Image 1 (cartoon, rainbow, N blue to C red):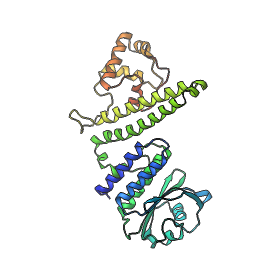
Image 2: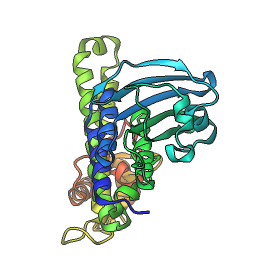
Image 3: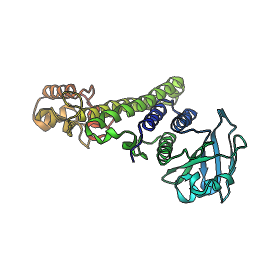
Image 4: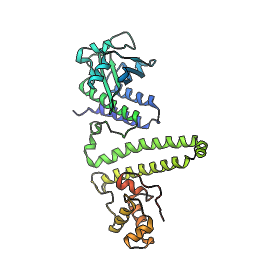
Length: 333
């Protein structure tokens, strides 16, 4: 079912905030999740827990109750509570399922009053249950089907951030970004979101290199780190060009361009094909021999193609065409 506008806005805001936080700032990820849940329902208690199902251990890195943060910790969970039920079913638990019976068998936190409604959703990766997110309310019957759907989406969002996987790997993005169903807008929207997250990561990497500059230079890894950052910058640039370029028409948005090299001349396309060959860029001299033209002409075609595509370096062409890395020994001779 489609989500209401207030719920969509809250989930989008959470997505944006989680993309903006610095790498390693897990607390802010949790905080953004709680803020979104509290914006769409009257949440009095909220927690995020990590689960080790094999050891029946659960740790609570984030606990919030009635306006204050609680002391975190870990414990062993029993076989008859909410966590065990979710571990076995991989489904969200709702207070309305059993009148709160499973919930009230578990660990209590916050005040002494029993909650009148609750929803607890799983965080599941390829290995199984890795965590849960719980929202509890003193108001009965507030966690509707829509809220359960939204909480499940938030759980996937948090897990993606915790495990640093590609944005949207576990998410039904069109649920919160219905405009993704419109091909003309999908590329631009996702390019902006992913570029924001990628640039945050690049900035964090640069700061790390700066802080450990002498150490990296001493052990010989500085060049590799800088090369990796350079590749990442090319990837980000090529990614946004690919996504926006494919979906941008002459008047802004609406047309669909499925060919990233649309607009190049036949000879420019031949040159780009060799530059982006799976066997590696043969360099200007190799391209000249293959096409039986002069190296100066090759340079002219490469420069013209880069200009039309909005790129600066020929090594970026591989990301645009194949979406993958390029050999590091590419020659611009």
